[in-house]
Length: 204
Image (cartoon, rainbow, N blue to C red; front, side):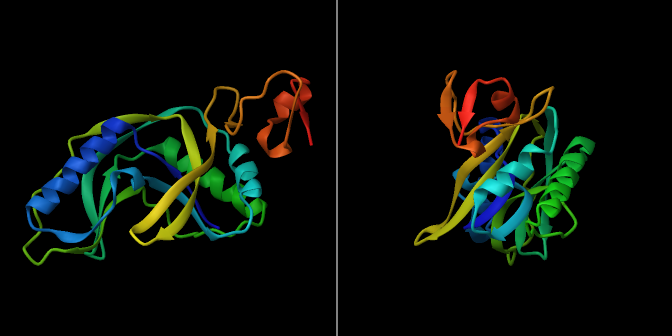
């Protein structure tokens, strides 16, 4: 499986980013535009890895409370990738640092390049008609969960599928993969430590 950890934008932000894409197209920028459902911010790129369970376990140990991020501007990488950028966020930087530490602790390989928070809008962009005056109206969102995605290649492009997530909470995150009933028997990866200790679920 090809895996990465990321943040999905809210519908409001997704709409604003799609409007930025449309503005780029209107000004003659060609390239591979990401579909609205594929828009995301990558926190840690893992790549090919055979098992999602250790990754989810590492994600669960990275404590974070809900925090705000704000998309504020457009930028480019190597003059071929257009992205939406966010204002500086100490909470986001801390979360990424924790995730990378926990992945390393679990011996899970990941891309250790310097984290640059962005959301890719266009790949292989062609600015032969000039760089347009496209922009993003500042939009904020509350990050309340991080997700593990599987990336699959199809005839129509890449498909990103959420296969697990960890929600932020004042007392710590929990893996959101099932809603157990009292006494229900679940796989260990679908139960949290607190659920097991409290006897709410049985683990196998």
